[in-house]
Image 1 (cartoon, helix red, strand yellow):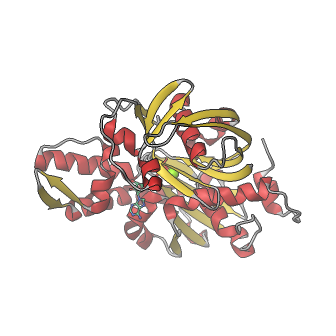
Image 2 (cartoon, rainbow, N blue to C red; image 1 turned 90 degrees about the horizontal axis):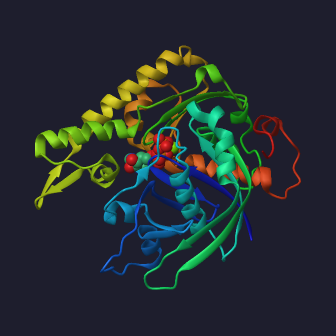
Image 3 (tube, protein in one colour; image 1 turned 90 degrees about the vertical axis):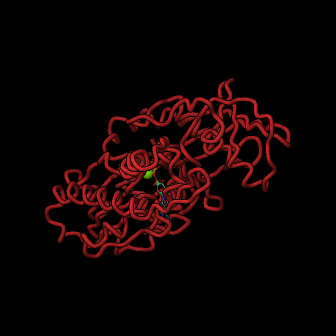
Length: 351
Ligand SMILES: Nc1ncnc2c1ncn2[C@@H]1O[C@H](COP(=O)(O)OP(=O)(O)OP(=O)(O)O)[C@@H](O)[C@H]1O
Ligand SMILES: [Mg+2]
């Protein structure tokens, strides 16, 4: 079985799709431990919320399970995202979630933040390529052993994914020639990085593109400080997601609304981003469109969009990059007879 898939190992969340199934889990890896009591949930929920894996002979909790149960959260992704051990564990876990049968072959399109793209591209390709063995440890059913093979890897600057999602159809054919020929700005607000790029006729305009460390987690840090001040509680930011998304926190059995705190923090972060982007995009009027994307893009859209004319929030923005990666994977690695276009010379072939 061979699959063309899109993979996005974000600082906050791993997103992966094969065009049929989408999977999402927090980019957190923790030490595995023996659990005395496990509740029953639906099999699908059960799996994604209870990722217990063995990679290279060692056991880990991954995603929500690590957040809930690990005494020691071993690591989350570092600055350049190139902590090879954690990347490998997250990657192998993600592949196993899309496996069909014990051995599945993959061709992959993935992304890197603009700021690390050139220097990290090759390392990432090497890390992903080849055999990935992983065991999924299950409570109620026998362990599942996977021997997975990654044949092809293509790495793009991350926000390109959201653009390809709009330009290509599911088989990788160009459906929006107009957009492919336009000059567009893309702002991808993630958990720890915001990437912004300008693409003209599918060419990345490097001097107008950049990465910022101001992203949604910047707002989480502000919120966590306010929570500490007001309620005397401390929670690491990677465990604050549900609280902030639901806009309420329960403390000693009492629920507090966080709308105001959230508005304040999101507003500040959006303002900081606007200042950074404006200093680079001096001639904003030259852009035909500005796309806001990424999970953080959904959170900040209402604050960002008024600052750009012709701005649009990507559909399913947290998945937009990975959907685009998967469409490009179909184009690059699918068995289609297709007339080539300028797009192919821009993205190149395999590496
Ligand atoms: N519909 C939504 N509304 C508000 N916030 C959302 C929504 N969907 C996702 N988010 C938030 O977006 C954040 C993660 O975004 P995303 O998955 O794009 O980050 P990432 O890719 O992991 O980070 P990075 O790009 O920095 O590596 C999470 O904190 C999540 O709560
Ligand atoms: Mg991202």
